[in-house]
Each structure stands twice: as structure tokens, then as C-alpha cells.
Image (cartoon, rainbow, N blue to C red; front, side, top):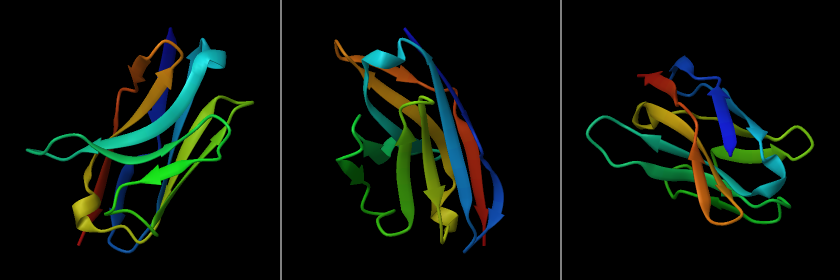
Amino acid sequence: QVQLVDSGGGLVQAGGSLRLSCAASGSISRIWVMAWYRQAPGKQRELVASITRDGGTTNYGDSVKGRFTISRDNTKATVALQMNSLKPEDTAVYYCYVLSVGNRRYWGQGTQVTVSS
């Protein structure tokens, strides 16, 4: 089992920045992929960014490429999402996600990001 606690959301003006953090606990040695997803009202949950265990492979949603950066610290079992040049359309609940050995998937509780125009 893996437990996730995500934090760092808030209200920011367009063009501003926020940094989200997620701390994992439990069976952290079995974690493979860490990622961030988001879900806006009335929309499906979508991938924002993902990163493999060794940090060698990252993947970004088209709408955030060049603005967001994902990173992880395996020693602390954390994953962060640096969000720059935020836009109103980035407004959503952001969820930390982990894919663990055995294809087990875990979600954080979500943190609200609101970007005002």
C-alpha cells in the first residue's frame, strides 16, 4: 500500500506560478511512475505530467509543455510540479498519482488550483 498527500494548491493570477508537492509513504520502494493529473469541472481527468523512477523519462500533456516541470526525489519519496505562466484554463483539482509494482495505482486526495484572469 502507498499513501499520498498532495499539497501546494491555491489561488494565483494569470501569469503567476505555483509549486505542488506530493509525499508518498508506505511501500515506497515499489513505486515506479509518479505523476500529476488534473480534473476541471465538467471535464475528464487528464494527465499533466509523469516521471519514471530514475527520472530519465518525463511526459507532459500538450497544454502544459514548456510551462510545467515535474521532478521527484526518491530519497524523500516526493514528487513536485512546478507550474509557471499559469492560465485560467489550468484551473482544476490536481491529483498526485503513483503506479507501483504489480500495476497498483494510488491517488492523492487532490489540491485545488485556481487561476484568475
